[in-house]
Image (cartoon, rainbow, N blue to C red; front, side, top):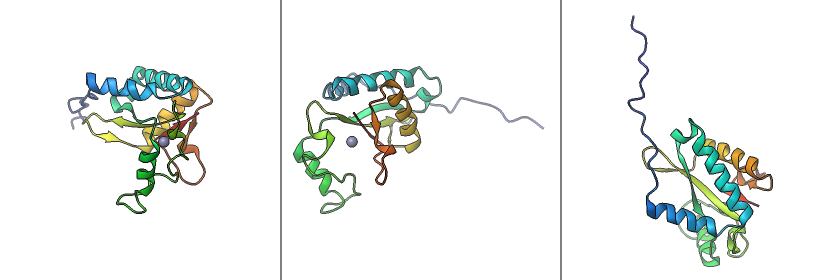
Length: 153
Ligand SMILES: [Zn+2]
Protein backbone atom coordinates (compact mmCIF):
# COMPACT_ATOMS: atom_id res chain seq x y z
CA UNK A 1 0.00 0.00 0.00
CA UNK A 2 1.53 3.30 -1.06
CA UNK A 3 0.99 6.34 1.12
CA UNK A 4 -0.89 9.25 -0.39
CA UNK A 5 1.51 11.51 -2.22
CA UNK A 6 1.71 15.04 -0.91
CA UNK A 7 2.17 17.42 -3.78
CA UNK A 8 2.10 21.16 -4.20
CA UNK A 9 2.25 20.76 -7.96
CA UNK A 10 -1.31 22.02 -8.38
CA UNK A 11 -0.87 25.00 -6.11
CA UNK A 12 -0.96 28.24 -8.06
CA UNK A 13 0.44 31.47 -6.70
CA UNK A 14 -1.86 34.45 -6.26
CA UNK A 15 -1.20 36.69 -9.29
CA UNK A 16 0.69 39.89 -8.61
CA UNK A 17 -1.28 43.06 -9.18
CA UNK A 18 -0.20 44.90 -12.31
CA UNK A 19 1.34 48.38 -12.05
CA UNK A 20 -1.99 49.87 -13.16
CA UNK A 21 -3.91 47.84 -10.56
CA UNK A 22 -1.48 48.94 -7.84
CA UNK A 23 -2.03 52.58 -8.85
CA UNK A 24 -5.78 52.04 -8.64
CA UNK A 25 -5.36 50.50 -5.17
CA UNK A 26 -3.27 53.49 -4.06
CA UNK A 27 -5.78 55.96 -5.48
CA UNK A 28 -8.68 54.25 -3.68
CA UNK A 29 -6.78 54.13 -0.39
CA UNK A 30 -5.91 57.82 -0.75
CA UNK A 31 -9.67 58.55 -0.60
CA UNK A 32 -9.89 57.08 2.92
CA UNK A 33 -9.45 59.01 6.15
CA UNK A 34 -5.88 58.42 7.40
CA UNK A 35 -6.84 56.09 10.27
CA UNK A 36 -8.79 53.76 7.98
CA UNK A 37 -6.16 53.82 5.24
CA UNK A 38 -3.40 53.07 7.76
CA UNK A 39 -5.38 50.20 9.29
CA UNK A 40 -5.84 48.67 5.83
CA UNK A 41 -2.12 49.02 5.00
CA UNK A 42 -1.15 47.34 8.30
CA UNK A 43 -3.70 44.55 7.87
CA UNK A 44 -2.55 43.96 4.28
CA UNK A 45 1.10 43.76 5.42
CA UNK A 46 0.20 41.18 8.07
CA UNK A 47 -1.86 39.20 5.57
CA UNK A 48 1.01 39.19 3.05
CA UNK A 49 3.52 38.12 5.70
CA UNK A 50 1.37 35.13 6.71
CA UNK A 51 2.64 32.06 4.83
CA UNK A 52 -0.83 30.52 4.59
CA UNK A 53 -3.04 33.55 4.01
CA UNK A 54 -0.85 34.87 1.21
CA UNK A 55 -1.40 31.61 -0.70
CA UNK A 56 -5.16 31.83 -0.33
CA UNK A 57 -5.77 35.26 -1.83
CA UNK A 58 -4.70 38.88 -2.07
CA UNK A 59 -6.90 41.54 -0.42
CA UNK A 60 -7.94 44.46 -2.64
CA UNK A 61 -9.95 47.61 -2.02
CA UNK A 62 -12.90 47.43 -4.41
CA UNK A 63 -14.42 50.77 -3.43
CA UNK A 64 -13.75 53.61 -1.01
CA UNK A 65 -15.37 56.98 -1.79
CA UNK A 66 -18.67 56.63 -3.67
CA UNK A 67 -20.56 59.54 -5.28
CA UNK A 68 -24.19 60.19 -4.33
CA UNK A 69 -25.18 59.26 -7.91
CA UNK A 70 -23.32 55.94 -7.69
CA UNK A 71 -24.90 55.26 -4.28
CA UNK A 72 -28.36 55.83 -5.80
CA UNK A 73 -27.51 53.40 -8.62
CA UNK A 74 -26.51 50.77 -6.05
CA UNK A 75 -29.67 51.43 -4.03
CA UNK A 76 -31.74 50.85 -7.18
CA UNK A 77 -30.10 47.44 -7.69
CA UNK A 78 -32.49 44.70 -6.56
CA UNK A 79 -35.37 47.21 -6.31
CA UNK A 80 -35.89 48.89 -9.68
CA UNK A 81 -32.91 47.43 -11.57
CA UNK A 82 -31.68 43.80 -11.88
CA UNK A 83 -29.40 42.11 -9.34
CA UNK A 84 -29.36 41.38 -5.64
CA UNK A 85 -29.85 44.08 -3.00
CA UNK A 86 -26.39 45.27 -1.96
CA UNK A 87 -27.21 48.31 0.16
CA UNK A 88 -29.93 49.81 2.33
CA UNK A 89 -28.50 53.34 2.02
CA UNK A 90 -29.67 55.92 -0.51
CA UNK A 91 -27.36 58.51 -2.02
CA UNK A 92 -25.88 60.68 0.72
CA UNK A 93 -26.72 58.24 3.54
CA UNK A 94 -23.71 55.93 3.20
CA UNK A 95 -20.38 56.28 4.98
CA UNK A 96 -18.88 55.93 1.49
CA UNK A 97 -20.45 59.24 0.39
CA UNK A 98 -18.12 61.63 2.23
CA UNK A 99 -14.62 62.58 1.12
CA UNK A 100 -12.27 61.60 2.65
CA UNK A 101 -14.24 58.37 3.01
CA UNK A 102 -14.75 56.73 6.40
CA UNK A 103 -15.58 53.40 4.72
CA UNK A 104 -13.96 51.01 2.29
CA UNK A 105 -14.95 47.68 0.75
CA UNK A 106 -12.60 44.70 0.43
CA UNK A 107 -12.47 41.60 -1.79
CA UNK A 108 -9.76 39.07 -2.66
CA UNK A 109 -7.92 38.09 -5.82
CA UNK A 110 -7.70 34.30 -5.79
CA UNK A 111 -4.88 32.17 -7.24
CA UNK A 112 -6.90 31.64 -10.42
CA UNK A 113 -7.20 35.41 -10.85
CA UNK A 114 -10.90 35.59 -10.02
CA UNK A 115 -12.27 38.02 -7.43
CA UNK A 116 -13.87 36.56 -4.28
CA UNK A 117 -16.06 37.97 -1.50
CA UNK A 118 -15.59 34.87 0.65
CA UNK A 119 -17.07 35.40 4.10
CA UNK A 120 -14.34 33.25 5.61
CA UNK A 121 -11.54 35.31 4.07
CA UNK A 122 -13.31 38.55 4.95
CA UNK A 123 -13.68 37.46 8.60
CA UNK A 124 -9.97 36.65 8.74
CA UNK A 125 -9.11 40.03 7.22
CA UNK A 126 -11.51 41.73 9.65
CA UNK A 127 -9.50 40.38 12.59
CA UNK A 128 -6.35 41.95 11.15
CA UNK A 129 -8.13 45.26 10.49
CA UNK A 130 -9.47 45.46 14.05
CA UNK A 131 -6.09 44.39 15.46
CA UNK A 132 -4.50 47.21 13.44
CA UNK A 133 -6.95 49.81 14.78
CA UNK A 134 -9.66 49.07 17.32
CA UNK A 135 -11.75 51.96 15.93
CA UNK A 136 -12.44 49.93 12.79
CA UNK A 137 -15.92 48.42 12.57
CA UNK A 138 -16.62 45.46 10.30
CA UNK A 139 -19.94 45.18 8.45
CA UNK A 140 -19.90 41.44 9.15
CA UNK A 141 -20.37 42.19 12.86
CA UNK A 142 -23.56 44.18 12.33
CA UNK A 143 -26.85 42.80 13.62
CA UNK A 144 -29.29 42.03 10.81
CA UNK A 145 -27.92 42.80 7.35
CA UNK A 146 -24.29 41.62 7.20
CA UNK A 147 -22.13 43.75 4.91
CA UNK A 148 -19.01 41.56 5.05
CA UNK A 149 -16.90 43.41 2.45
CA UNK A 150 -17.44 46.67 4.38
CA UNK A 151 -15.11 48.34 6.90
CA UNK A 152 -15.57 51.75 8.48
CA UNK A 153 -14.27 54.00 11.24
ZN1 LIG B 1 -19.12 49.48 2.11
